[in-house]
Image (tube, rainbow, N blue to C red):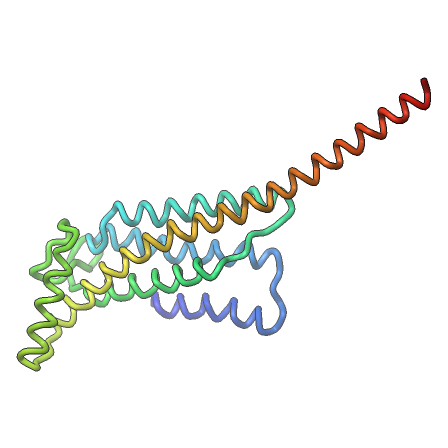
Length: 208
């Protein structure tokens, strides 16, 4: 269901761009739909101990910060479109969440929990178990569902680190774009204000 929702979310933007139906409202609403989809999945992962809370706080906190920038930009009369970094971050989030779900087993508060023999509270525990599972598969040439789950879970945790880095990187990109556009607006307003002041002074001199 999550993968299906992610595909339809991407397909919506793709069709809009191909048909030339991109609008200001769509530019504002599409990222909100992305954030709702990803945030709901990430919170569920934390509840089931499939992902560390600190990483999810950074990712969702970044979404709040970018949403705030978009709101201020809209109030100023311009929009900040998604950059390639943000789109790559979205793709990495989908991959990370999908891998973590595929690496889970039945159980936990909401029906899912980490695979056996993996301690989710230790940051790099999943990497060690994943490497051992891969070694077992290569050496014995035997693939089991347990080993595949551990591999998926380890890959998902590794991808989650990449998501955190991309989230901070793309947030910096948004702040840079926002600052550049706001600075240009402020400079334009300042020039207009100076022109108005000059006109008033000229008018006063003529009257005097």
